[in-house]
Length: 277
Ligand code: NAP
Image (tube, rainbow, N blue to C red):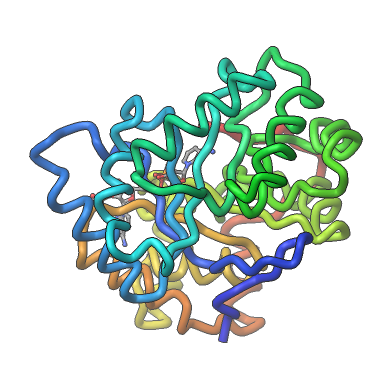
């Protein structure tokens, strides 16, 4: 059975299946369903919630704040600073705004959303400060390709724990060089858009294999990411779909199934640039 937690380079543990929040917080009508879905996920053990100051301009963090109210201690909270805010002082100020929106006093994992104009030394100095002050438990990056990672580890005191990147069956480029490099350093791959924002679910091949296994295409896509040792963070605003996605944790894929998936979605045979949405 896929493990439910992994240990990060700094020794803290993180759930291996989480919940995304992009596009949450955009409409007041949808809020009730969004909060209910996140809470159901927490109750089912998908306690990692991934959000960002960018999503709905803080709206997703507010929805997250509502969802975790009264159960903060059960949740592994992830948020991200926008590159335009990622200066020494700007990172801290953005962080404090995120805390307010989520009505909490710490974030488990804080990420730089993507590389921007500020030097990584500046951003990481702020991250180190937050770490030293006990306001975050770990930090990391997002949308970093291998060359960015190689540069990043010059400034991080060995503290980068996660790189959150686009990774799913239909987009496997990171397997060529980024993923092996990260694996060697025990830096976790958090897989965003694990369902390729539903595009993947339309694949006839995926549907066929899922049917053979009597599971849903979403469950197969997530189970494969778990098998790869990554941390998928599917987003759904539906309680029913959270329940469906949670079952991916109970699925073991055997060698013939993995081979069939490789033939439908071939792994890379050359360096590919990091995929982004
Ligand atoms: P995703 O999780 O691949 O797909 C989300 C879509 O799939 C939603 O439309 C959702 O619809 C649907 N869905 C979820 N479960 C389903 C199921 N079991 N069956 C059918 N449809 C299902 O895409 P994503 O939101 O882009 O990625 C996940 C999270 O990663 C984001 O929410 C965000 O937290 C993070 N992310 C980070 C970055 C970054 O730059 N770091 C970029 C993109 C995403 P319903 O809500 O209607 O169920």
